[in-house]
Length: 60
Image 1: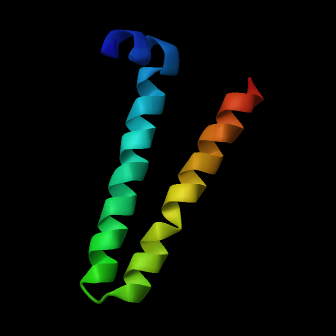
Image 2: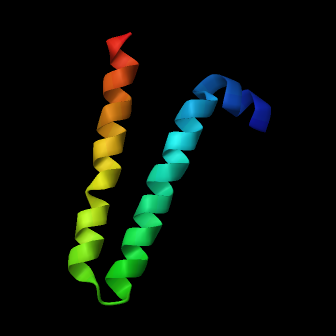
């Protein structure tokens, strides 16, 4: 099942999604620790990376 998912989605897309999830987690940790401006700054990276992934996907 996992192998089928990796073949369908692609290893690079999975890696990028893991990066996006880690960015969201780091942002939440910073926000909850009181560093709200740092958390907001880092949180903007996730949609930027997802947008770049969409651009590369539809450029083909």
